[in-house]
Image 1 (spheres, rainbow, N blue to C red):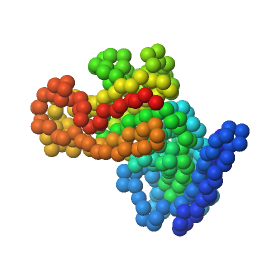
Image 2: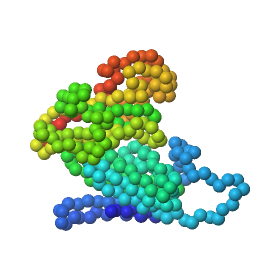
Image 3: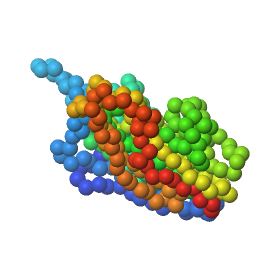
Image 4: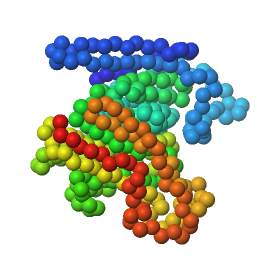
Length: 308
């Protein structure tokens, strides 16, 4: 288990990066731990009101003991996932931020100062993971290098609405076995894709979200390639689940959740990362939506799977 033991320092970032040659494995891998102090005045508006309550007026208290550095482990969990475990007794009950690839995921340390989070590596293993605490302690780590046989497609949003990412593999229609989305993939199967019997890789939703809570919401589709797979294509659609078949209430007109801005990130097997943006435009209240209109197929380009 790799434990990050940062030291809080003010000013510029300090840290150590090393590259280790695995002589027995014949491969090289690198790790980097850096701790920085956030710039003075840096705040996270979406966390206001969630900090530990200050001492009541007039109450006196002896200075608390110094808060020790958090213990953090980063473990590969398969299919480009990283299991992050945090232990920090003196930060019990506080929030922390896990920032990666332009997304900020908010987690709460329990009464024992523990938290666990599975991060999907949709932005590749060259993108730093930042773990930030409310006292401005920050730990950075590169995620474990994921297998080259993976492709990932992610949608990211922060509008407090529910979106579903759908993948239609190799000409699949709605409801076919090759129609992949979070509502179809049982949680127990998300850690490892099922074996393929048709010389084609298989995809599954490795991260899903209901769009509730603070920070970024994300859904990630992961496709695991085979060495000798047949060529084909995968089409994508995004469903504005909260709006459904009829625009009404807080999801229509000028309401704050009538439209959604989202970012799309595509990670290819060679490590190339593509970024784009899209949106669901607000609709007039009472607008009825057909299935073709509800499932937006224009946000994500078709993905071509080619023979090696």
